[in-house]
Length: 234
Image 1 (cartoon, rainbow, N blue to C red):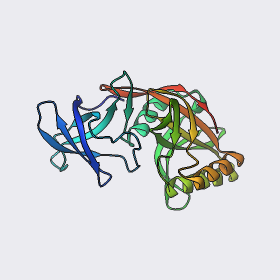
Image 2 (spheres, helix red, strand yellow; image 1 turned 60 degrees about the horizontal axis):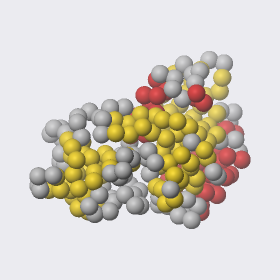
Image 3 (cartoon, rainbow, N blue to C red; image 1 turned 180 degrees about the vertical axis):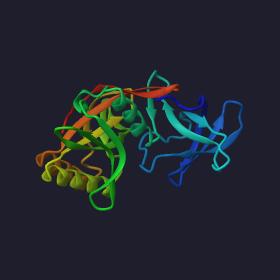
């Protein structure tokens, strides 16, 4: 998935009201960018951090920049836009790059299911059960090389796990797909200290037959693409 327009570098001044970030460009000018991330962004929203912004000329958008990346200035990046994982996975599914999810004829995004929910992707194929795929963006890392989810309490995420388990009970296939938007991690686990309820729901869903897949991403100011399968330590 390539970014629609070339990204521009800046320095973070502050992130506030969850969806707003004040930034300073290299020429000293400042602006407010949209931050498409409802989580805590623990460790990623430190003042002075180098960030990459995507400009837009959409007259319907009040903010003319969107915050896309954190540049750790050591060769590694973190993607902060929670909409990117779905776009990257959709691109990968369309060309059969996810071995665990191969062999389906139809990929449909945002299909209604459960209790007033929408599944990120519903995969269908003749002669096999439908496959419900829920995608989560992972950006937290508190130990070197270890990615964690979630970075804040997520009642919505807990609800999704329960609904996936219900799909399995109805004879379908259900997959929880964690996409790590960091280039510095090779393992994945759950942040059970941050959201014990989510951790408990995860264990229950997995016991019920919900499959768990985790991939990392290749990230640069040019775009984000699906990477390799990561070790899951849960």
